[in-house]
Length: 377
Image 1 (cartoon, one colour):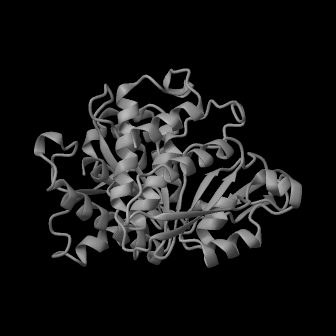
Image 2: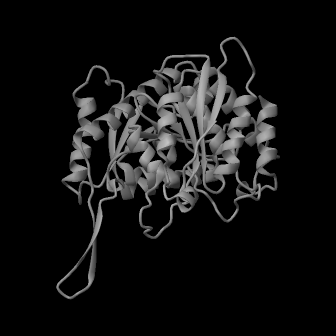
């Protein structure tokens, strides 16, 4: 239960024993960590209530774009919508420079499947030397600068000037805010079943709203007002949830100085992306941090790390973020018991500290870590 509490993510979806999962390894180490996640799912103990997995391999990514001229094939989208209950996405090698005709497939997936929130739990493992924290970051997933409406103009001196439009809507802000406050309530409900001595978060549930409305008074001002309005318009429902705010720069500072001060954090797309990647340093590595791209009807588990082309194909990639992302996927689909088994197996391997990939100071391979988790199951 404590492990589920740290993730704080529960399903509203119906349960069906047959579960079809789309596997989208995409680029780089995605081709190593997504098979690892599949192996763990297939190693779960079987019972009458257990999911019966079927897997569909699907294409996407920059390398697919280079070969076929499209980063997210129509067939991939069609099969996700028509055949799958959820998906796992590996990593994408989006270039840092403009490439004509290319756009990120994971950003496109979020848009096409209306995966409006990115849920990223960052929690320490009890019994280790990590700083104790239990934070859930909710990142609005569809707007902000990620709408990718950019242009270049030439000024009166003949010099180039680049512009990027930023979109913040009341609709998207409210959805992200509602998820944040609902997750705070869910985490608090789960805590009630955990001995006080074992709880990483000891206070009342709390939502921290991240913004920069002292500078961006229109866009971040709308974000701030709308998310605050979720609690203010539902005072009875959210009466037990504290609400505070952090300017994004002070949020980063406080997150590293006192991460134990935060429960649920909700942020616009860009801020949430930066904060959640930075938070990974608090638990040791990006290779440990999972996420789930969540909509009302679909979820895509996605490790937070990138494609890491420098180590791709060398069995150096840490599979734990992908394995935990598979756990998040199961939680969303209503299989909380199986998700708990995955989390507990991962935590046991980390607590033991003998089998770990190079990013954590070890020498173990991707496969060895995966096998160790499966053994714990």
